[in-house]
Image (cartoon, rainbow, N blue to C red; front, side):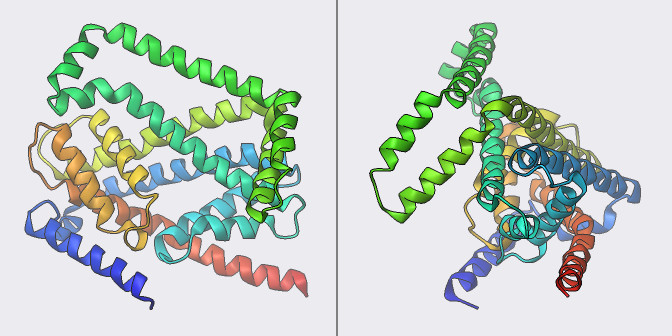
Length: 326
């Protein structure tokens, strides 16, 4: 194990230690779970995976018409499982290699994964923008909150208008051959390998010009996924903590955790996700300290149970591919 990975493991262990010490993470909460609740969360995990696979399929089908939804679902589940069990290996990389094997337009397929992630981040940004009044209120930033609260309808109207304007401009750019040629002609002047890769990526990106509605559907699906994730956390909170802390608090906390998870601070962001969720929930609920980290830990554990069969999919797919090659 490299020094870098050892350092990540140490961070995870230290964070878990401090969370347990400050009574925000109780590992024994797992044994108090109701079986019906676990089944509900597993069902929601299944919905998350199906929505996520379909969202990716909308992008993949533009790059390669021969890729089926079942193959996409299998690959997505494979990446989903590996992200939980092989902390040192990126699930996105393996699922891309798996689905792109023996397929044309491998660069386009790889770009679909990047675009899928970018759309997910954009949707998280949209959710945060709509949640700012609630965030300002809970953080007790009176100046911003009073200003937004007094103009709440104008605020939401302006945000909605801004989003539609950005989508409109993005569609115009995608459909503009002149803009495409101008960008590519400018980049063609440089012989750097990275610039050449960027040029190829931008060229493939413009293949979505006739299918821009797929990207809009993607945005809608990405927002739905965020609410399903938040609902899972919300149901666990209702079961394990005192009182109803509200779905919106869970949506905001979950989004912030996922944004933070882009940075690989610990293996699988163990400890980091729990700490981040606990901290955001603490501020979102009038600075009342409860076992918020336990909620996220339970959600992670149930996800690992749900993802476990994906490891068998991984080994089965390798065996099947070896047989096909023979």
